[in-house]
Image (cartoon, rainbow, N blue to C red; front, side, top):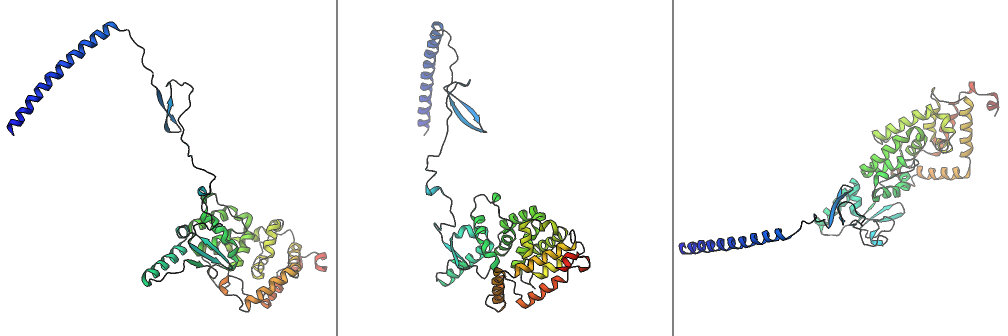
Amino acid sequence: SRCAHVGRACAADSMDESLLSAAAVVSSDEEDFHDNSVPRSPRQPSFALVTVNGGITSNPGSASGSSSARLGLQFSGNLSGASQNALCWREGRFSDWWVKVGETTYNLHAFLLARASLFFESHMSMATQAQAESGVPQTRGSDLTEVLPLSCHSAFEDTLDFIYSENQATFNAPASKALLLLKIADILGISSLFDAMGRLITAAFSETAPLLLEQYCRFHIPGTDDGAALRQIRDGAVELVVRKFQPFLANPEMRTALMRLPSSVLAEILEADELLVANEDTVFDFLAARAEEARSPAAELATSSSEGVAAGLASPSCGCRTSSAPAEAVGEELLWHRVRWAHLSSASFAQ
């Protein structure tokens, strides 16, 4: 009301008069204080803020740099405790999705698998949708036995090491598994692993071509298409082996890989006019050593195994070469036709 406003104004006027009186008293006291006091030195701050590694921290004491401890923050948890360890596929702790590869079953973690692999993400999505539609709980697992080539089964644990790695940029794989891992990444849709193995293969291609070619022949099924990337690696490896055949033979690991190549691929290499050898004896000695190795007990066991595959005891999807033993024998015989006998030394010819 108007009366209230008037009252408030009067109260404000009386408050202003009180404040003015108080200010006058304080002013008089300050004049007396300054008349009776001596100057003081500037007060030192109790602490200063300093920059450490781009951040701000406090420095107790003088800002001019007195020796005193800086404020530090440190996590007080037990770093050695089990709770601080990253999840590992070898332990199976908190696992919620199993994966079977051959005779081995792994207890893994759905989130990590789905985040890394398009295959697992799609499989899990289908299982979730089927359960939502039917109301029947679905199997929480994937059987990769028939999905991955048999030759790639031994490299699956390396794939898990990559998926579970906290720093995938530092992941490294042996050259003897690089192409197998690239094949697994291609099948399971693990783009980060595919890129990592692509960089590894490219960096070491000139030194490991026989190993890469041997790995390709292990999972390639004649008459099938492995994709442009793998075809490019295969053709490039054959070309490089032709141009560096004798230097590769001087490396025991590369020589072993060349020994394991199927006869059809070796024939393609040995018939090239650009084959780098000191003389034709090199080709003869290589084939003689390969024939000797084929007669060893281990080679005979491998031959009987391949005959079982050819007879239908294993699925073609396992990735094994399904050529029969007679066909491989014919191929071995044809290899000797790649030796240019007219240029062989008399000693080798006599042998």
